[in-house]
Length: 155
Image (cartoon, rainbow, N blue to C red; front, side):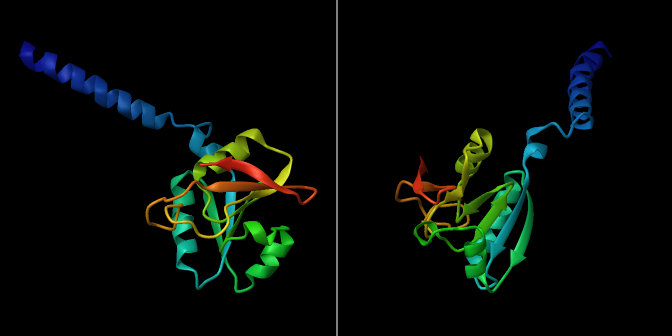
């Protein structure tokens, strides 16, 4: 009987701790700190539809907006052609252009630079939503409010 109690007690404490931890999840956890992301994409683009679940797995609440007029989206958010990609995401006051890795998005949201947004041009292999193996350094550019493109981050 003593042996059974000595085995059962640690198991009970572990299970109790897990239940207590789950019951005490609060909106202050990191998952709830992520702002809403609105992804504009063409209905004919399958890789864009792969990027949406990626953002959700990173803790974002995502609104997906299919549009056949991506040009007007790029114009509305002042995205220059040299950093264009196949889809545009709006997070807070920033645009996030293309298959952007979470590390770049986190840096943008943590540092809050005085820019319009960031872009990863094209559709590089190994980037989120694209599949394949990463073969190059991802050069991520920022667009200033004066519409000057400068390097934001290399990954």
